[in-house]
Length: 188
Image (cartoon, rainbow, N blue to C red; front, side, top):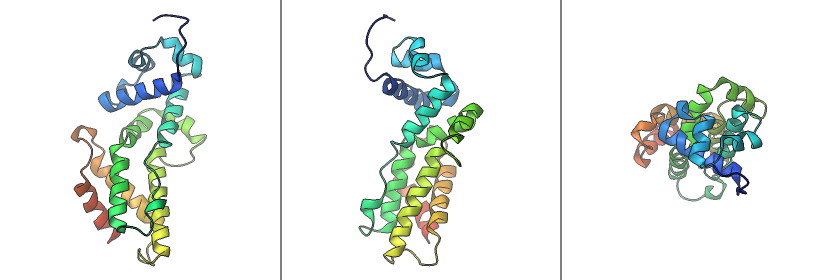
């Protein structure tokens, strides 16, 4: 690797390389050497920007949580509740979200670091459950969700059920029809 060459947005370059490896090869293939090789930079570049590899991974996970599909606030009151939830859940499950779950599970030091800023759950899944719960609560206020339902529990049930159904990334992302079946069942 050449030295003295200015790198543009090196953090994003490293995060993008980590995502490619994670999606392609799984969490066990995610090493500092693999990330720097994939990014086309010297190994020292990663350690110049992060104290260690677990700090890099924690920052990577939090960066990707910030890139989860947008909240459903614009969908409140429009379309059908089931269509809106299916679309949001399909987008979440088709993102890097499912690949992050085994990464967090695989690395205990990563979980420890994430706990400093993320108090409970697996970041991407927890964020998704909160987003769905908030959306369902807004729809409930409009009378489009059963008033006796607990929106936060429904959000967690949707995320948990979908994750259990589609956690195997080798099968590819779930189809909207498969996600819709889960949504219909949970919202019923």
